[in-house]
Length: 403
Image 1 (cartoon, helix red, strand yellow):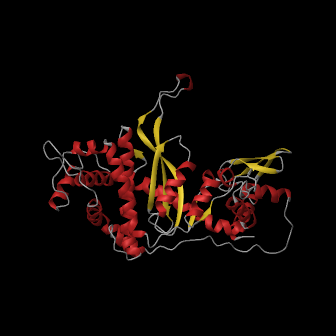
Image 2: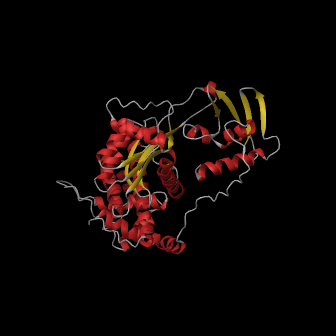
Image 3: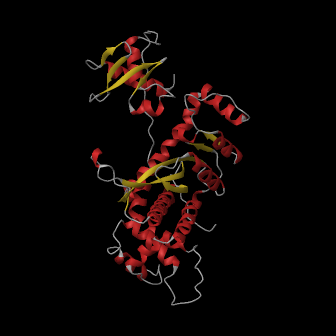
């Protein structure tokens, strides 16, 4: 029994220690109180196993039973042998933090951010202007766009930041605040920002070898189609779905794809991984059930990596011409504990999304669809720069975007 299994069993016993923790509705339905003591969950016997409506079972029930199922089985004495052996004390896994380096990076972030952003935008090639008055340099436009998103200020209030950047000679001309908004409206800005996302992750190519893939939604300030009044729902926000590949050690974002809210995850996997493999040596790739497919396993194998993607509970181990699928399926079934040791790295991509939303907000302020995507890309570039600043103190690197 692994440490995680023992911990879940220990939590199940804590549930059983509470008064009236399990209530029988009938022979096939029970309710089990939550560990916190607030509310309860419904457990129903379906076919050959218990099904719980708790979030843990909905997400991981195909891999392992939740603590509520374990508590019911202990209560009914199903599948457990009574023993006098004392349960070992489970020590939760914790991760140390070098607070000295962390504090230094946070205190220096605002000053270093402008310097790294200035170095980063120097890679942008200025377009040829054949006629008309000379326009604002593209490097200056992109610099001010990312600086504005990083500051979380409105266009008008961020004007003071542009003035300070001009005094530091980080831009050649101070733009009008409307010029920044117009830059975000341009489709060609998207291509430039995507390149900056890749370039901003490049200094960590010697550190990152394991990667996680996932997606998350960011709410737009604009509204979609009005819903029917009979449902008493007046309006609904639009969402952008952001698909990323992130490094495990530093949570740097190596590749990003932005789609509408209803686009599936799996088709984005190829672009995320193949573009990452062009700049990084890929060892492990972890992703959730939404990416479980033969094609995705083969993509990781072609770049010389190992995919740790769980299989759906109705999956059969029949290869149908794909030996990679068969081997991965048998490894998942026969070496579950070893698989989970790799799969737990997937939590890093959740941490990445949480960090972006806490630092830069989970709402996109732009109303135009192109501007919304560009604003989201600016958030990711700004986030990557903050990761580089932390890595400077944590790993002693000197970010060089052109090495």
